[in-house]
Image (cartoon, rainbow, N blue to C red):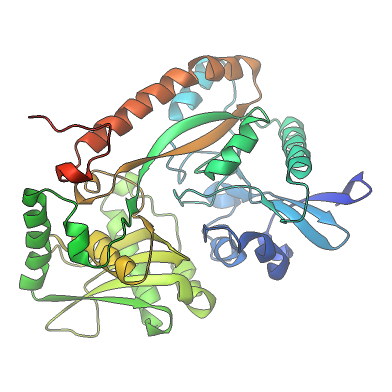
Amino acid sequence: MLEQLKPSYNLTWINQIGDIPQQQWDALAMPLKTPFLEWEWLHNLETSGSVKAQTGWLPQHLTVWRNRDLIAAAPLYVKGHSYGEFVFDHQWADLASRLGVEYYPKLLGMTPFTPAEGYRFLIAPDEDEDELTELMVAAIDHFCASNRISGCNFLYVDPQWRTVMERHGFISWLHHSYIWQNKGFKTFDDYLGVFNANQRRNIKRERASVTQAGLRLETLTGDEIPKSLFSQMYSFYSDHCDKFGWWGSKYLTKRFFEQLYPKYRHQVLFVAAYNEQNDHQPMGMSFCITKGDRLYGRYWGCNQEIDCLHFDACYYSPIEWAIAHGIQSFDPGAGGHHKKRRGFPASANHSLHRFYNPRLSQILRSYISQVNEMEQQEIDAINKDIPFSRRELPLDVELET
């Protein structure tokens, strides 16, 4: 059902991305650095059964058209919980409960289950971005008011887009990810050279332990990947998530992985670990996505615990591949306990929030600066603890003597 907003624009809410022509959506999404707003990825999430109302992710994509041309879009979801977001807003939900405010449902802008920076409205380059952004924000406000939705949240947002949305009244909340940056490395030894001597020895020892266990790691991408590895990756992913029970974050179906093979394998990188007894069936594997000069680690699993295999398959081998293929940044995924000691500094990212309850909104505005200051202190503390050599330390970091 189209709503005429002005002579040149029509707006519609669409509850499945398959109703939008792929070519038109990707004309907006393909120029972006992130791969996770492309039609094929989002469509796979929906058609695989990973994203649907029954899993608490109800698609409500906002689109703006001129005649039959898609000129702007925003992938959005109505959420009845906060799982699969990796921005932990449970404290806001608890506060809302104490105030007698219904926190759910909420409207969410992000790629489901994907804590990777880059979310933004998709707007055709020749259009008036300010005008369309104002139009889309007004539509979101109206949608939330009409459906008694507590708030609108955009997670892992594009840094430039964040400043645009702040001008429209959204509140920025600081978080951090762990991002490896290519500092002009030509070889893996160049990467090792940024660490102090002790950590260089540790990394070499960790990689050597995998070899000593009789394992060979192989990086595969595009047509190099056998079709069978996609279903095998689901098995690894599923088993790994099951180890953590309720906290296992198992959101994707087997069908999601299998549907990547026909049209998306050109952006997939597997690091597969083979042992000497079985050179065809991997006993562990990590799964990454690549686009342009960026690499994103997504999932991993193994059917036998091998010392340091996780570090090699998820960090060292992808970094080695990244250096060889001109990758400039590598986001290995959520969590950070193991990452900082392997050259992944804490890097700021932001989410954007608007609460429609006046009391909840006022508390957010009053305290968010303190919350962000504490988060910045944590980022600084993490980065002071990275075992870089003195010459690689940022200018504002000093080693204790």
